[in-house]
Length: 247
Length: 325
Image (cartoon, rainbow over all chains, first blue to last red; front, top):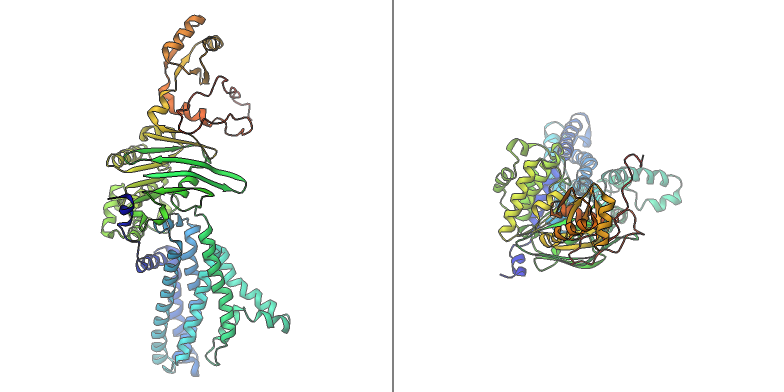
């Protein structure tokens, strides 16, 4: 057998296998396990609290679900940031990218694992909201818009975290930017109406209002904000990763 | 089979690796030697596709590393044993690697045992591991893919004496089975004990390479006399080049010539022997002694030559103890 034949004999790791590996990485460290556990506790706690104490439609499943997604979208982006940045902060990338030299495949697998985390969170939150709304609150009323908006908001936040983690390859930078940037932008945007005309296009802190179930979604502003905070850093981060040396 | 051809890496204005070319053949253990910062790790990263060369190419098993579909099943790479996630257990770390490369995870306990990590150690988080335990875990991750080629950066670091002997036997057995081993080290003794081929790098340039036996064969004689200056004069008169080595001199000639030179110079010797005992150390120092004074360094011998003996002018004597403080 020739050398070239020998190196081709073992097929490259299939993407589903890489996703399974990244999924494990997301949950098998102490830090991320605690974050996920705290998120789960927070989601359960808030669902029960809202069902028990809110009144009217706020105690219905649709509203409870949106609150669950709101809580999850604070903590899950950190889980996802750590999934990405640990390749550098823990220098685990030296093994990861030696095992899988196609770096974009690793990133694709991580992103799919992150989206899977969002999907599972959404399903669990839906069930939880229906149970709490029906058993403790004011009923199981939950519209398609409720479900879609909550899920979309969570997804955008998680992908923003993912992309910032990839772009900066540093946990503190990505986490600080994830939470501090919207505050800074909304402060700047509050200076005057003309400044706000600009900042409203990429102000993350307005996402909850933009994706509210009470009005139709302003797709233009949501789209541009997601583009600026999720898509752009993701593309720049991929370019940076391809060009960089791992060490 | 590993082949580096003209590998170069520039960091800013500095050439970290400059035109490095060498070959590692199946069935051999190649020791990649150099002082800290000489460019060893950078070269290994370029071979494994983790760093982009400024110029040159590297192939492993006949092609670029990054083209290998599932590299870990063919090439075992351990570039830094301390670069592992501290929050994961040893077993989990190995399991992730096994799953990535498609090795059945039922083999994880077996390999943990084979590298000497017992079940209680396997359950601990890597953050609590000593460097030696991380080396063992790193080797398990490398070996579980059953590769034909091993590329290891400083694998002996942190291992205790038993661990070093264990690794030595393991790597020798691997090469005897037809495998190719390239390992870097700054520990001369370790390389001397394991490697049969040597590549010496200094300041990014390959300064010598070849079979260890050949490289060390020309190291001449170690000679010592109470009358050192008389001995130096005698060697000089006989046209034998030499350099200082501890209390004595390392002379570029066999014992017969050196003894005759001393005799005709009327110098009594207190010691005369083949220099192979401290051969690798001497070779290493003679080839890397320019560290720190780039302007005055003589040009290194071209690669492939059986370099030894640093010429007629002995290097300046080291300052007396305390002079630096």
